[in-house]
Length: 118
Image 1 (cartoon, rainbow, N blue to C red):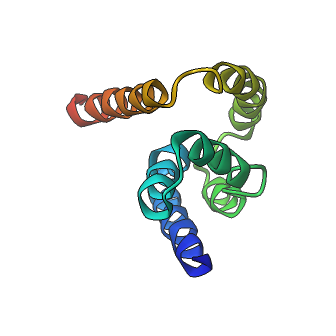
Image 2: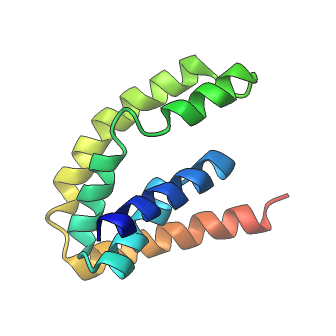
């Protein structure tokens, strides 16, 4: 089990470093389908994994190459910090099936936008 979790983290880390995504889009489905977690536990665990150190090395590499805006990243982090709290307060009271459907619809909408935009 430990190796499976480390491999999920490694795989998501590589994909995150390549395309800048990872957290909810990859970790949550992996925790649900590979580790058998429910939606609530997968989301909470993903948030725990994504605390401060995750992405730091990838961010530094992008920053060193002139591909990251530190000011924007810090402002996003502040908004994410506050918004994450309010989102969690809401999410823990939504039935799991609806939470999973909301998650899927957001993934579908974002994927469609990326796929069909110029």
